[in-house]
Image (cartoon, rainbow, N blue to C red; front, top):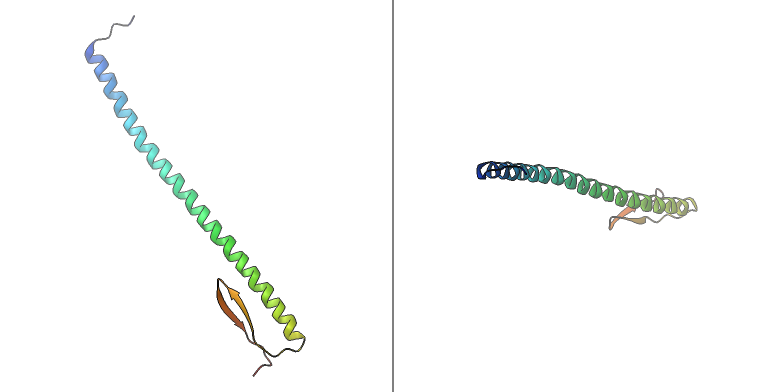
Length: 94
């Protein structure tokens, strides 16, 4: 067996504790950075999907308004974008 004395074991234990604390700190920073990046990507991706769907909805409404105006309607048309009304004015209206 190995002949270890009390001072050697105490020094090895101190080194292990210091290395474990340093690894814990480094791991905390790495995990924080990774989680921050993932959260940012998810939020920006969600925003992009939301804006794209609203844009498509607004385009569909504008297309319907164009078809209605092309058929001779003279009234303004209202579409919705993020819950806000957007008015498409008829060029021949009052």
